[in-house]
Image (tube, rainbow over the protein chains, first blue to last red):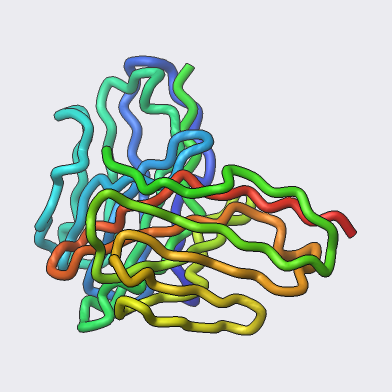
Length: 115
Length: 111
């Protein structure tokens, strides 16, 4: 594909429900990143994969958040027992993973609203 | 989490005016990036800066990597209505994967 795609674009969940957010990175991109963007704020790092290995998950706010990338391409961010404070836009980014690894390309995001 | 300090928070200007915004940090970064985010979209990379003191242009955009490595500046010349959006700075420490973002500067351009 031409860019990073994310689905769904919008998700409304009742408090306590589990949600799963999908990211399809740019084909061939080794590295994949998840960010959380609260209203009026900049994106904040959640977790990072290189291929299928999750190398950094220091930004995950609680053990209710879980991410996986089992085959080194598509990634899923799962949030269990959603809370109102989880409401945010969840952004996925990817890059080639070579020396210019800082050039991260973002998807459109999934806007999660927890009611 | 840590965020960079961006100023101003918002700007409302007339088409054709030049715009300046900046970003500061208490920590040193080895790379500075500037992104633009339109409503309902993800951030789009505008300019990347790799060396302290570096000045880089991309069309009407010019950005500078501060000598102290703790700040960066973005200038937009001759603004046009499609420049409307939120501009984010982001810093990266070499060897780490994570970008640290500012809170953004919202730019509004009046035709």
